[in-house]
Image (tube, rainbow, N blue to C red; front, top):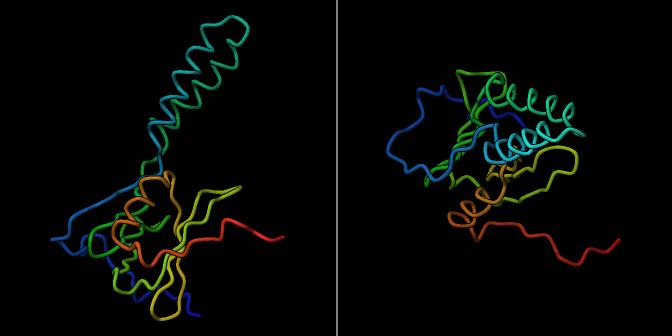
Length: 155
């Protein structure tokens, strides 16, 4: 099984045009972060939890404002683009006709993952911060290629 994805590596400015963007996801899940920020502000107001609220508020403001925003992936009706972590110039592109199957894997200690099995026998995984929208989009464009785990697991 190949794990060399250099043939799928393209420059970000060379991404093909003309495809409808179905989903684009970044590394900051804004809605949960803002809900936590509101909760931390409420904790700051209460006298018993003031210091916890201050610490949490400082941390969340740093994450929202100070941490670098970067794209994780973009899904279109023709291909999936996965942006590389330490590379702001290049990305991987996977055309939907190359994907034989895909599987959602829930993360226990890390982020949730989507695993793509490609027609050349290789497997590629990418992370997601909000799996609900991603799974919905993947099911809308590649429903017949989803690998579903059995509900009844035997241990």
